[in-house]
Length: 331
Image 1 (tube, rainbow, N blue to C red):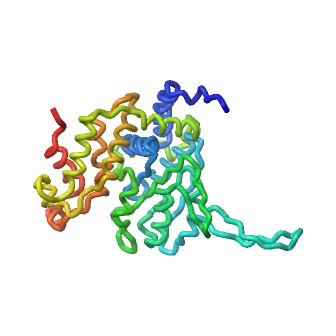
Image 2: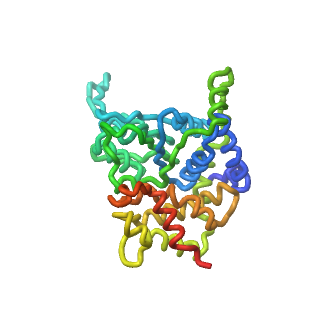
């Protein structure tokens, strides 16, 4: 039996979370909220869907995260002709030159990595999307009757471009539900954009220092599960998620604007994300503020808006804001 690594003790790991955030800000200017939400997704052991215009640093952010964590990083550009085997892998027929015997060998695809950037996931057909999302849920790949385990930790960041909708295959609601967080990447402020120009057009390389390894990430993911959440907070999360479903007793905004509400996985995700945010800030108990901060990223992709909402130009975030007002925290 091997002795536990003292460098992976929780007291020594928590300060390194701040170092990790600082390391990422060296490479990526601004986007503090996006960085925080990605780290929450990583600590909670979930996957993130990033939505933002091209050129906002999504790929750079993921690559920098891989460098800072000493994790393997792969990127797959999703296109209409991408096949499931292009992601999962394929079998090759090999011949032993000594015996002349032939046998199939499984050649692993790019999904066998720690950090996978699935770029423009909505540009590939549903068959390929389903292959990726099944691997995300099960953390295994089945091919020709054999199951292969994916590396640990395994973290998928999928991006979609909200501008061009021609030639896209929108993710079905059931598959969107597999993502822990839906992160919005907005344009930088004027000061941040000026800093980006200065940093990317000069001689400064913006190298990302290594902060922790895969074992440290797994230790932190285990610690997230131990973060305390009060019975009152748990009850409030349950009521919030249930109030998102139209029907008797639901808030008026929900009945008007939502066609289909969030399922139980939304509650699980909100609890885990709130715990991860607490640990990221050095706390061992989740609070109401954690839930309020993460309600939109956790629930915005799990709500199916009605025609009335679209006609009134209401977004999922508007509905979630109304939910938080209609379902107050127990006094």
